[in-house]
Image (cartoon, rainbow, N blue to C red; front, side):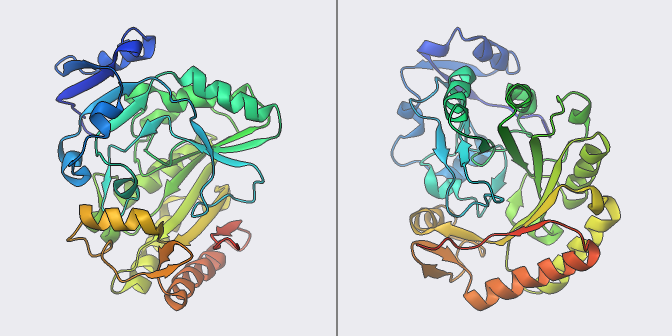
Length: 336
């Protein structure tokens, strides 16, 4: 973990108290107070919680897998041209505290939930794989790479993918660790996708995440170790002087990462569902990025069409000049 994560309380569903993964996770936190519960929702779904405040002192909840854990990919997410695009939430919430994170609008709690029965989630994926190839994102509702020391889920999913030739996995991250590459299993169908943000955006809004240089160095090390790496300039965040800020970010990127060896690139500006933003604004009343006067279109908030086009086109064109042969995926609003 980046830094030493501590949980004052660890809540555990009684039915998974003796699960091997529960015991493994508990071994990392001998000083935490363990509280047995019947169901994770008794803690996670309590009324009157503040996800923003809880992020400052998170508790951990260990739970059994839900009845359904694999879902069709959301319209606001990039599918990279895959027909069968799914995501899974083997963990809910994140060690990091990005002000604009949709999780604060989606979940009633800022506490971290780990579903320890990973084998049941594997079985769901295998049921889909019996029908068609699957592109699966496993790190949308958390940052699994940042949590690798706690649960080792990146290792488990990489081993699972290696056994299923029609499965491709994306692990999205803002982590800056370079030491994991010597320990993670390498599979050509497990893509490590780094969210790349300008340093001013990281400092202002992406609290606790790795600095830009650290993310870039981690991505470069991953490439050097033979891992498939994707760079995601997504979400682009509007800030005063964004043209220069994002230009400087690309200049720094090309200094550290061999862009010709990057698998592909993703570009997209900030967007969020109407219901999530409503809740998120209550959680982050003083955040400039959250309180921005977005445009509402078909249930989703985003920057105005002109600003969206200008920001994304500027980055795509500059990236194209740096890496003419680059495969660049730009998020497009789905048609009804």
